[in-house]
Image 1 (cartoon, rainbow, N blue to C red):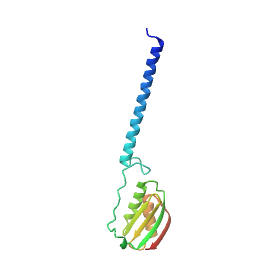
Image 2 (image 1 turned 60 degrees about the vertical axis):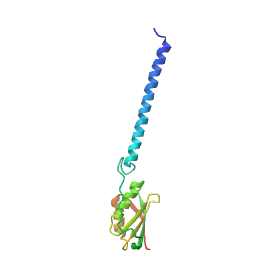
Image 3 (image 1 turned 90 degrees about the vertical axis):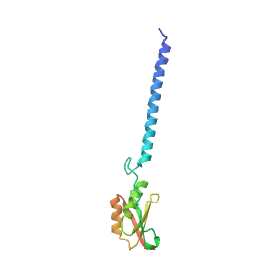
Image 4 (image 1 turned 45 degrees about the horizontal axis):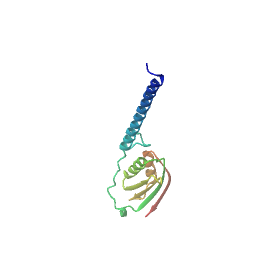
Length: 138
């Protein structure tokens, strides 16, 4: 028969191995989850949502856009939010927009005098709110 302290040591080794195994599984799961989030985009716009593709503007000559509308946009929290807003604006005829998530703003270049109602509606349809609007001729 084995001494009691040897049986206790074996029992402690089993507990240690069980704890180490659980810890390794948790680390592996966290690594997998992080890699998936990085690869798929993740974030506030939907867990594991693919990154929003940029809508390209055909006419990139700034001299063709004599008007500038500056917007303050509320509700954007990540790059996908900014890209979604930019795409909504760039889908409008005669518009070239750049949205900054850092400043929560958009500079919207327009070929014709900007229609505030249409611009606000495009941003609203993207899921955000224009809290300030100013338009000038450049």
